[in-house]
Amino acid sequence: MKKLITEEKIKSRIKELGKAIQNDYQGKSPVLIGVMKGSFIFTADLARSIDGDVKIDFIEASSYGESTISSGNVRLSEIDENRIKDKDIILVEDIVDSGLTLNRIYSEILLKNPASLKICALLVKKDKHEFSYDINYIGFEIEDRFVIGYGLDYKEKYRNLPYISVIED
Ligand code: IMP
Ligand code: MG
Image (cartoon, rainbow, N blue to C red; front, side):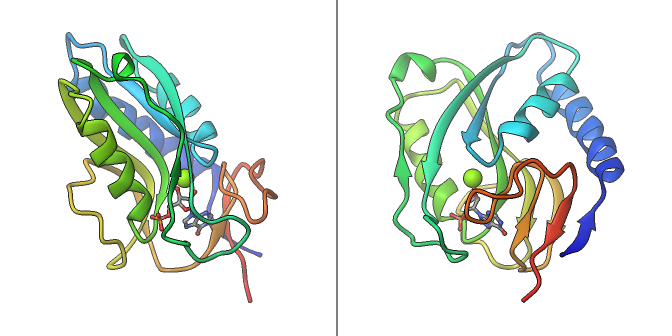
């Protein structure tokens, strides 16, 4: 395994993201919706980097099963409208790969009439995704490699690593 992003780099970038969100949402009370399971650590750290009134929620999405290639078949947990309606929602994703997961979640959430909807992704695979909207806050752009750690798994392993590594073939 090759280390790609150190714990220190992740920490300082998340501080910057928190500041940016804090600035953009002054006087508001945004809801961070973490996409489980991959973004549980990122969501927790991001929330603590925002000095202001935020709420936390989670939804569960999965498409990969036990493979490293997206199945394209995104399963989503039930989202009740009162969690979304008239709220300023920030979707918090660990990584945007094909973009299929985000496309699916984004359109599902829009249907439930949020006051606003933005996306924050820790990692985005460059030139690859086919997500149809803006990704408003991006931690790092990376090459198209399968990465693990800091919440991201391979077959449910490695989520607890405090840094991000590439699985080498
Ligand atoms: P997408 O639908 O292809 O954009 O994939 C999004 C989801 O697949 C992410 O939220 C991750 O949970 C998972 N995923 C995508 N790429 C990776 C990776 O490199 N490592 C671990 N999980 C990944
Ligand atoms: Mg995910």
